[in-house]
Length: 377
Ligand SMILES: CC(C)(COP(=O)(O)OP(=O)(O)OC[C@H]1O[C@@H](n2cnc3c(N)ncnc32)[C@H](O)[C@@H]1OP(=O)(O)O)[C@@H](O)C(=O)NCCC(=O)NCCS
Image (tube, rainbow, N blue to C red):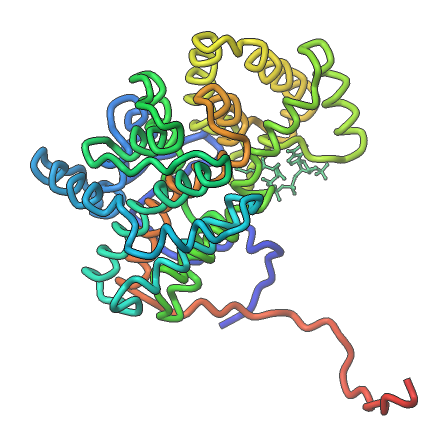
């Protein structure tokens, strides 16, 4: 087979999927053929995950069973909470969740079982328990009693309940749920590639998701939502936004929350999040934050839209998460909760038709170099 080199694997098709479709030129994203806007408006996170894992929407009773399967797994396995309570309180949540998802495998009697029913079982465990792990860690680090999960609540409601110790309002729970739907899957993004690559060695679901979390953490990937909030905090007012952005661009710095390897037009998820962010910001007295974001978008549109750089999913999710009341360092972990839906689905898809990922590398170093003894170097 002829070899071609593509830095960053840009333009390379490395897998087949039936889960999500992206048209980066037209700004289209579909899960199993359904436009993302439809799902954000009418579906729920649980239903969306069923869709991604089964490639069809559930019937009413199937959805109820799927929700029940998740809810009965909200509680952590015995010993897991103690393990969490031994972590340094100032550890960063993304490091905590990467470590604790990995640790979940030690509470699985057969962590390496890679048949499809076992992989689905593990996917349910990881998805149901990740919010509990994150909320417990947050309560522990702020010195508050842990709030046990409530199996009568959805993943979004339950996460906010365990985090804050009180039931979220319907608006907040809905906003959180929509964010989870919008972030659930996105083609062969870097973290999904990591998950599929690990699974292609026939490793295990926990290792695949752990690797994916490590990838998502990076500021060029899921970590960008925290970067956006840091930027918004650094800009003192709407009027100061233009100079801030232009100065950064002049220094060739990237503006977090803008640009995408695939989208060269407006990210359809960002469109939806913009509307959500504006609504929540006005409901929660954070309209100045939204206005700052809007101003940054306007400045970027004049400065760099010609290069195909528009807001991506992370840009307005920062304002949205802030208005929901999430601590800044929980923004990317929330992305983890959502994307477990995608990662686990891709792992299952990979194992349905596996081939080991093993690209080649172009060696550019010297050859035939004589060995120099250490005393002569
Ligand atoms: C996501 C990202 C890594 C995709 O980048 P990519 O496909 O590798 O594109 P490049 O970095 O090669 O960028 C192409 C051009 O657009 C510019 N550009 C891309 N994203 C930019 C941004 N966020 N701010 C300013 N300029 C940007 C680059 O400087 C480059 O300009 P040049 O051709 O004049 O050198 C990149 O857009 C980025 O770093 N964005 C900020 C982080 C972010 O929001 N990540 C979340 C993605 S969902």
